[in-house]
Amino acid sequence: MDSIIFHIDVNSAYLSWTALERLSDGDTQDLRLIPSIVGGDMEKRRGVVLAKSDPARKYGIKTGEPVVNAFRKCPSLIMVPPDHTLYAKCSGELMTYLSDFCPDIEQVSVDECYMDFTPIAQQYKTPVSGADHIREEILKTFGFTVNIGVSDRRVLAKMASDFQKPNLTHTLFSWEIEKKMWTLPVSSLYMCGNSSVETLRKLEILTIGDLARTDPQILEAHLKSHGRLLWQYANGIDDAPVITRPVKAKGIGNSITLPQDAVTARQAKTALLSLSESVASRLRAARQQALSESIEIKYADFQTVSHQTTFSAPVDNDRMIYETACRLFDEIWNQAPIRLLGIRTAKLCQTGEAVQLSLFDLEQPQRYEKQHKLDETIDAIRKRYGKDAVVRGSLLGRGEEFKKH
Image: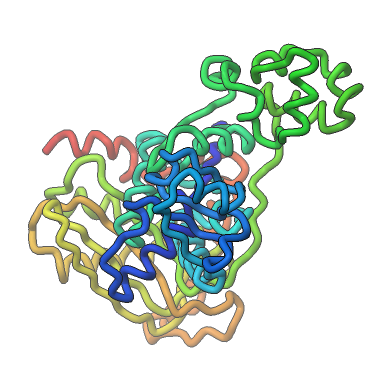
């Protein structure tokens, strides 16, 4: 399977986060709905625009321009100062939330990150449906919007996320660049700044397509190594992976919006089995074990319920997490159609710490170790040959299961 990379970018992050904070403090005016900016000195009107609302954008106000210019364009403009402590807090909450969907995240700024979607792609019909789900859940959870670019290359995912905004998903796969990217002006290309644009203009290179078709040696003669980099990006050449760094997680979980509402326990538990395997695999990859587990059920009418329990000893294996999820499910399901299911583990400890066995485990002292070795073997096979290299028989054809009811 080809790599699937998301670039997730908060729409006008500073202004959105400031607006939400003010609303939570009792402000009745939503800065996102009026001409407003973040930046500068409110008294002297100095500095530059750090973020702007959509209404401000309509006046031609641009990020990075002097505040004084922005007020010339819109004298009634509202300006608020930046709050970097708030932004760091909002950024951390977002990244932690995204890691619940997929741990393979590379944060590149306070308001944007790359996600290697490949490990969880099988949970969604298409990468676009997965991106749409993440966007919608971010809006429901936090109240702000993001754009998500979807591609098989990092630079193209970045480009796609900058297409029309806000709150949209765009694709720009390597086979789409001629149609979607080459017609754009070179100023739209990532890493192509004003100085490079001016140099390229003198060479009569006006579009990204012009740049892609230019001899890279000519570009190097005028722009040195940066010229070749721009040529590579114009042609969608970028083999850089998503570089993740381990983060100490408070919990590891996953959720899935079902392709059709589940109306039977069998349908729901098929989804819970897939989620259990995903969560357990992530625990083992992070060298973590869990002392508690919870499940979430969101019904078709969007009512949400949850239920949790604790383990007598830390766990990280598929079977234990699945059996516990099924028990919790049986205890709270009210027989109504189910839209979403989720599993989350918490109270994590490092694998290898002393494990206190339950009475059942004491009766079978080798059982835990055998199960752990089996799970790690399956993890290794899937890592080398793909997620579908080993599939439980009960998961085969699970899409048809929903069509039968």
